[in-house]
Length: 294
Ligand SMILES: CSC[C@H]1O[C@H](OP(=O)(O)O)[C@H](O)[C@@H]1O
Ligand SMILES: Nc1ncnc2[nH]cnc12
Image (cartoon, rainbow, N blue to C red; front, side, top):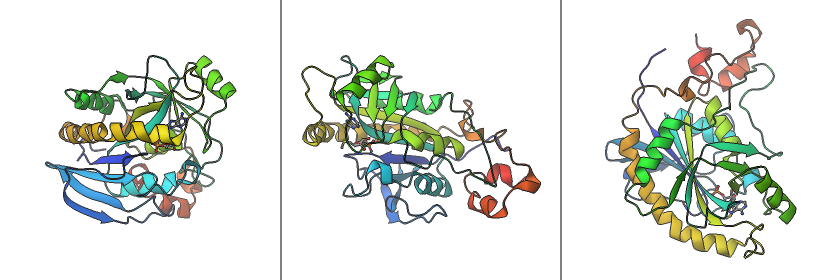
């Protein structure tokens, strides 16, 4: 296995972030995937010398709801585009008084409560189990923190993101229960995105931008889209600043990630070579080609 890497930064823009500024050599192109259609064309470009691939998660115009996102196509096509590091930018509700709207949380854990999504690239004919103990990349998380410096952002390192199915917001009982579980923020999209990035051996970090206090908060009867959008508009400019600043930091990621994200499949595949379904092997040529080709 080669111990070096040519970093390509992938940005998955969430609600409110449908394009990014400051890219040069820009071209929007559809990338095909055996897993189906991606949310939109990808925007290829560069920030300085760093190649960047941007995908608006819900499509330009926000057309696809969380449960209908084709997470597998998105991650597979990012892998096919050479992406080594994914920065996910997401709007979230806060489950803590000390994380008010406007705060950016570089989350490092997830509780996955989604139930209507395909969560793995692997299935009958090719079985694999990757570790999700540490679902985000600490090296990329360090870069996000450094990228926030000087941008007048209240940023917190670490936190647990509860991923709900949606599209409705939580009931009061659910919101209170998630607080008791020790979760910090709530959203609808980072799973199975983070699981699939791990299976595809791509480093993944999520900057979660708090837009509201969810419904548990005494001053905050219910979450409304109006409220979320008002805060989002304020946050999107700051998120673009983070993207601009992180690109030169990711360009230094020329050695493989020491946290192991980029070698996650090394001991994960269970199916013996002679029992593997050739069609599955072909379908997984981008995601798992590194370990399947041997
Ligand atoms: C517009 S509020 C609900 C919506 O926003 C978040 O999406 P994203 O993570 O892509 O920013 C949340 O998860 C919901 O999908
Ligand atoms: N309160 C909330 N619950 C779920 N997803 C969200 N996205 C933004 N705010 C949210």
